[in-house]
Amino acid sequence: MVQKPAPELSVEDIERFGPDPLGAFKVNLARVEERIAKACERAGRDRAAVRLLPVTKTVPAHVLRFAFAAGIRSFGENKIQEAQGKREALDDLAIDWSIIGHLQTNKVKYLTRFAREFHALDSLRLADLLNKRLEREGRFLDVYVQVNTSSEESKYGLSPEALLPFVDSLDQFPRLKPRGLMTLALLSTDMEKVRPCFALLRRLRDEAVKRNAALTELSMGMSGDFEEAIEEGADVVRVGQAIFGKRPTPDGHYWPGLIST
Ligand SMILES: *Cc1c(COP(=O)(O)O)cnc(C)c1O
Image (cartoon, rainbow, N blue to C red; front, side, top):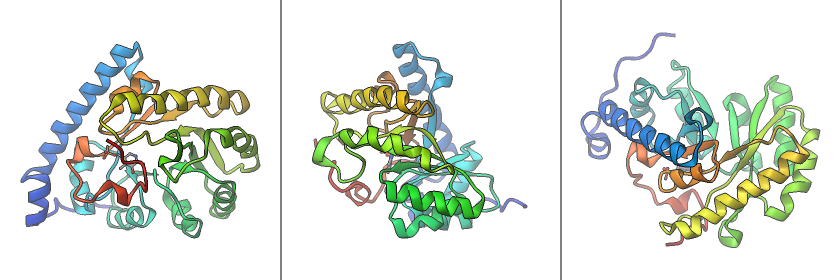
């Protein structure tokens, strides 16, 4: 398919992303890259061991054409409907879509049509519905099991106690390709509160991988804490605002609970 010409920017776009989103995204991406490289160095890890998943939620589809032009090929979206709309608007571009937020069971069919991976698997019912749909579509899906590492602060994700029994059931869903565990740490600038969430996910992964050898990766770390996450072993960092600028929507819209300063 032929790529569409560079999009026009509205006044709101320019207010939010500046007059040159392509230039801004490139600069931000380079800064994030540098911070990832430094964190890997501090942790004695290979840069190639850490994957950056840019999170594009709330960035309008036409503006995401600049993200693609800046070299970004994987787009992480929290909400399936937003992702689906963007996917339709950008279907001339070869993009890998990752759904990283909670999925309601009645929206499974939208996800299985196009997503490459899903980072918020947290129930057997959802696993079963995904598996059945994928079977029909003749597709597979990479999945990360979401764990609630901040105790009762968040309402999504399995409790640490529920994780191992859940892992033992994953074999029943051949269309799901387990990749690892995912968490949202406590949303705080106090790293003394954030780091224990990452360390807990790592310990849980060490247990989980003994039961299912495919569960090797840790999806953890966002704009405010990805360096700490890498130091604690993150294999995938999900970074939005550090690349695309501050979001106008309050984060409570995406993560009920969690906010603590
Ligand atoms: C939005 C979001 C992120 C990225 O957060 P930023 O602060 O923009 O880096 C990561 N993970 C999930 C699940 C998200 O919804």
